[in-house]
Length: 120
Image (cartoon, rainbow, N blue to C red; front, side, top):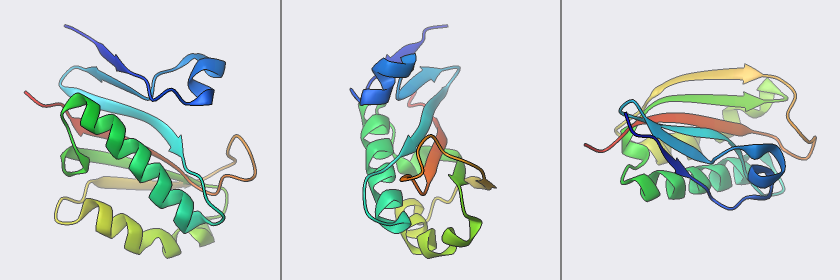
C-alpha cells in the first residue's frame, strides 16, 4: 500500500511534526485544522478553505468527505457555524461529531478534522 503525505506549509506542521493530510487505505485523512479570524464563524470558514485546498492536492474535494469531527472549547458557539458547514458540504453531508474540549491556543474557537474517500 502506498502512502502519500500532503503538507500545507503551516507553522505547526514543522513545529509539531505532522502533515496536513495523508492518503492511505483508500482515504484522505486531514489533520485537525484551525482557521484564522475574529470569531468562530470566520475561523470555521477559514479552516474549511485550508481543508479544501489539502483535499484538492489529492484530487478529492469536500464532496468526498465521509466523516467530520468538530472540536470547540464552547459548545454554544457551534450553532452559529451551521450555515457555513451546510454550505460547505451541501448535498453531500458527512457523518459528523462535535466535541467540546480545549484547543492548542485560546484564540482558536474551532478545529475541524475530516476523512474523505481518496480518488481512484
